[in-house]
Image 1 (cartoon, chains in turn blue, purple):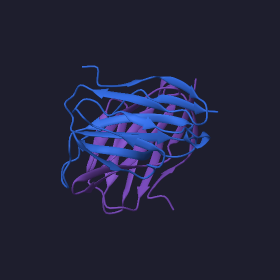
Image 2: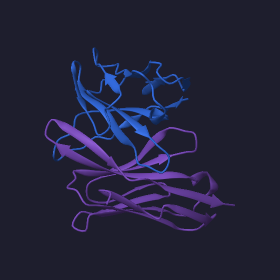
Image 3: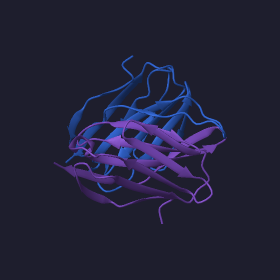
Image 4: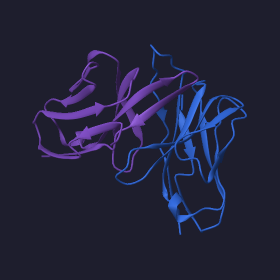
Length: 116
Length: 111
């Protein structure tokens, strides 16, 4: 299994440009997540999905959009990139949990994005 | 105040030392994760625990649910243990399951 893969690894965008960060998992996980990690801050949840066709906002969704047409793929779209979106982006996946049972999350290698 | 607090933020140790990283949380959780992130690298799950203690090699994680506190211990530390260690509280929310992350502890083990 490749686990969780993300592309690209690095990207520089100009202000106002758009791009899509790709995320794919081959573990048949139903839950997928997008996080951003800023220096000195904990990871913040941008969007998550509990299954194909179902997505919801996390803590910091503004400026981003997602879709989940298949179990495997969960792309993150940046429209009109802004310097505040300079960050490292991580995709993760897991099985669903319950109140009594939690499953670990598997993380992709990250995408380092700079907006200038 | 963050819902998940870690201490210390930075830690420098000599090779061979016993290391403890602490994590306190203020929310109700189903489990607590300890994660490791190497410089420039991805994030790897080390432990997930909801009670008691778990051990993997030189790493030991403990949790006290009543006190809402967890610790990560590294015995006989080695320079390759140098990384950021992150604790994350798993919060069950019905249809949604979320991790709430601490800001991480940067560990440097010197030879």
